[in-house]
Amino acid sequence: MKIKNRERLISSGDIEARKVVLEVLETTLQSLDAYHVIRSLLALEGDYLRIGKHRWDLERKHRIFVIGAGKACNAMAKAVEEKMGDRITQGLVIVKQVDPGEHLKQIELAVGGHPIPNEEGLHASKRILKMVEQATSDDLFIGLISGGSSALMSCPTPG
Image (cartoon, rainbow, N blue to C red):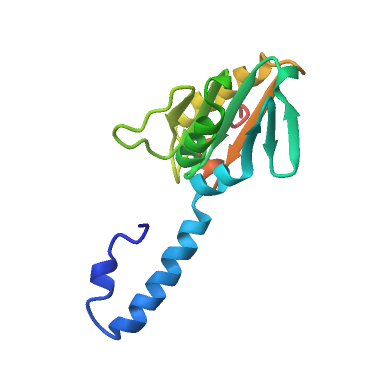
């Protein structure tokens, strides 16, 4: 359930109408949930990775990296890791916060600044750039970007 203050919202006014509106909102929010959207878009079919209409032969890829940033990247990274597992060589996504007990095996969750960029986000952005610099044409990158990424993954040029 996404709406955490449901009981308070239906405690006054036209309670039946409020229940209907909240049910519609809850259903809509569930269908837009980043975790469920990514899980529905990404599929492993033997040694092939399918994302939407695109397919990659993973036998032809040396390494698989996951990079990204955004407020929904915790859920997005979890969905990718659940589908890809140990096939992921390394991953780093920059998020607004990491909840207690939230830990992924292959993808690191780094906390950056939002809505104001900070040093931690800059440091994580530079680490992503190093990951990209070491890649070859035989590697595959899965990019995860959601709202807030411009603040979380900022890496301004000097000056």
